Length: 548
Image (cartoon, rainbow, N blue to C red):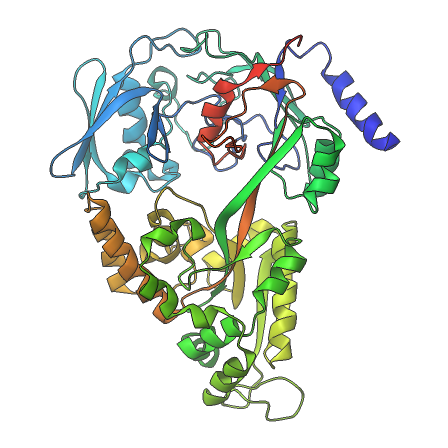
């Protein structure tokens, strides 16, 4: 405990003289050291770039739209365009007025310079037009009733600064000009970042915090230790036995969690070995893998019981249970439950038998059936889940070697189809579409795309249904498409859903009040991770406690 206190004291002393009176300490991402990189188009940008330097056009939350740089939008009747109406009176942090020209410039970049297209948004943009001083029209390459949801991820930069930058992809933007609340880089080192109030921020009266501080934290264990000492105001960390190891330390320490996205096993349908590829492409093999796994035990060990086992064979989040009719939900549920005898029978049917009595099954040719299961090192729950999965599959005669790889190597092997099996998670969305599209749309199976669909399973009907969803303007129509997608994916058991992670958020009331709550009084604080747009809405609701 003494060493923890000394660490905290050192951190606070090193920050003395830099902090403004009301400084919020956050951990939006683990890191091995900071580089002064505020280029929003780079994947390695600082985690305090989005939202805090560059505000979004709007932020969606359930049935609420939080308008930011935009004050409204309207879809064209044919769904092939969207009109954005922008706020008046906004200035960039250097005092130059924000205008429609900035939005036209920023969205056009994604079409004209594809290397900056961080979210595959450019593929939807046919052209961008300025229509009046505060109005922008975006013409789409094809109809999309959900384009506004995609536009909340668009980053709007000042045209007067960025138009003269030649190599935008490599530019570090060390002295950023932004529209967000914290654009003044008050302190920067490899282990500590302090961003303070934008003097021209358009919501000065709503902003009660003077600065945000982002200290270096390398591992989840370090994060837990320093979080428990009260150094951080806001974090999103997995803490084993969180009641005992965190909230019991102080009445000001609070947390909440809810089931989040699915963690799944992926198979390489493009496996380089023809015989192994044939095995992987047989749905009986994928079902056998799924039915060999005791998911409750995986959850107990890998995430200390802080998870829920998969509820849908397609991997849909449990929060979308009202989207799927009961008959469709139950139709393939058997295959994502523990039935080892059935699993063994399916493997026998495929000719995968132990022919040399070494305890492991061979391929029909007699060659060994030996597979690796890769997980990103440092992701403790993933590596634990991979290890337990390997043990369970070894028990039914499938030889699995669990390998923890550096994240960069892990993603490269998946991108280049140089793996056997892998474990991954997915991003959440307001509807099931974000998950289904990112996980099963074969358009996203190139080396430049994220890992989510790099199982390389392709089904044109799935692609067509994903396109069809974007044309549906009614919830009834959307649900019909989602049910068909769920059934197609479940029938093929494309991936093996394991468990839903519990999304945990920690926040303290020691220094700040205003943490968001649901109508029933339960916490509604979003994660502080850089992927969460709602973190900006939460930050604007915070205010120092009395006497601070």
